[in-house]
Image (cartoon, rainbow, N blue to C red; front, side, top):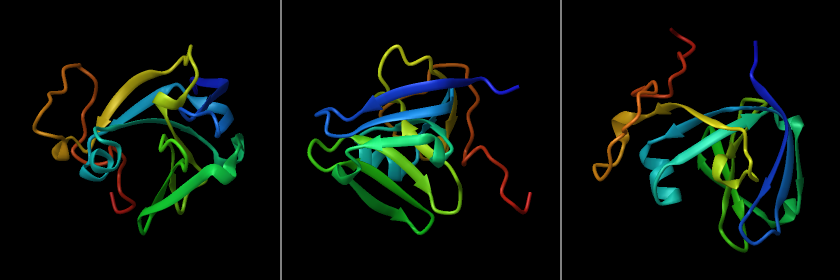
Length: 140
């Protein structure tokens, strides 16, 4: 059984980018990898939906940064708000939890790439922690 939100809305700090998403996972993954921390200033907390279920108003205000050969990150070109994360070979758009309008209906579910986490903080909850992505690689 999927525990998805039927619909949610959100956007950037300045309001030039707004989105509406359907069938969004309630579960938020907090990523502690070096790349997420360097690009955001701390760590990423994302949920997500199929790309076809995300409608963006003001998409021309999004800058997409190719963060790696397999993923890109979308942020507002005016205020710099981090909004999206897209894996190149998947029909999925990661949505930054902090960009969701309240009440979000979201809940933190897991921590990934904890082997890379910053040395200046501790993870102080009892949620699952994974050294890598938390998802089996195709060879596993």
